[in-house]
Length: 306
Length: 156
Image (tube, rainbow over all chains, first blue to last red; front, side):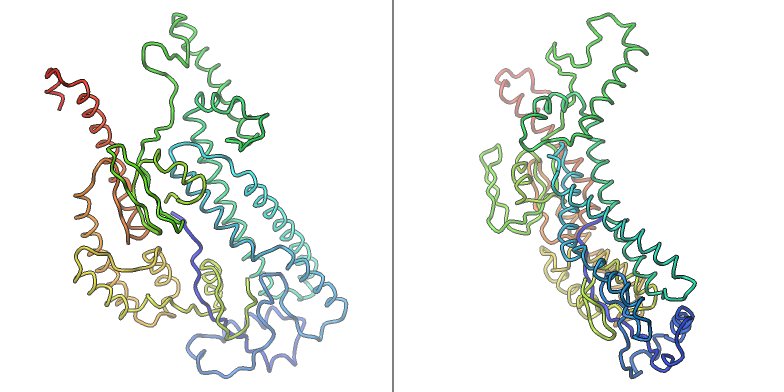
């Protein structure tokens, strides 16, 4: 299961193209290829290098090319760098973590949690921006490929951005699919639950798209049931939400299901068990408890499910 | 994302490091805990305190696996050595957590010190058993309430 984004330290290997610099440079690509062959780790710690232009200026797009290039290209590059720096990559880490937490909570909770409208909106717009950026830079790359301006570093940067988008898209998909699976299994329950909420403007349990999906899905399902077998049954057995006879037919999430949790707030939390026992949850502790007891704490974020 | 300069240490997310490493553009500095001596110390600690779990990072199993497969040349100790100590450590911890399962009850359990992967190994079992025990517990207490008549005796 995915979790936080563990960080490790890296040490960048310098590209030692000091002496090749004079000969450059419309086949930058080839030099890079060559260099990457020359660079083996065996002699890496021993060589003395004057660091050359950075491999990356940022996770933005463009490496610092050497000044031999004409002004024109430099201008474009600068433009691009500004564009590339504009998307707040720093904030992304935070966003990413929020998304992971939301996804995990949703995945481990037995019931549907309120839809994270704000978070989703932000993530979706940022993905869109990044994708646009990617498209733009591919265009840029294509039109400049013959001229040899595009180094392999440039491609690498595109690749990294692409990977990042993929990672976030995966989290998003997982989040939404989990929600849909829950909606599917407890359809009638959630139709009743969310009946009055569209207009009231409070924290919505479902997003508009999800609500639409739920109603349509239910309609199709009911139709299928009716045509295939319910129509042939006596009419008092035809109800899908029969509650007579002491047994309800509406499937509801099992809130007593035990869940794995971790406490993230500083204050210890005291839970009262049904046998009048008290259980104190301290920070960073890992426990398995019934979902019903910690439901509220999950919603305010003092406890995360794992 | 900080700017990357040659020979400068920078902290980046793991996946970026793996890509860069794959392209031969960086060396990964292994985290301090991923060394034979440190893990050995942890192992000894685990042996000494049969009740406690030693302090390891939340993702230590996954991280060590990734680093050993993708960046073995950047680690201080040989990967076989590391693999064997990790395996020892894992086994001794598994043993402990399994012993701890004896205390499983229907309402709650505390699992401090276990890492994510180890939790996931336990998860299906623990959830199933706790669910069942909960059911049993509930039926016992409901029968208990109306159980002054001893007809329901055979149910429990």
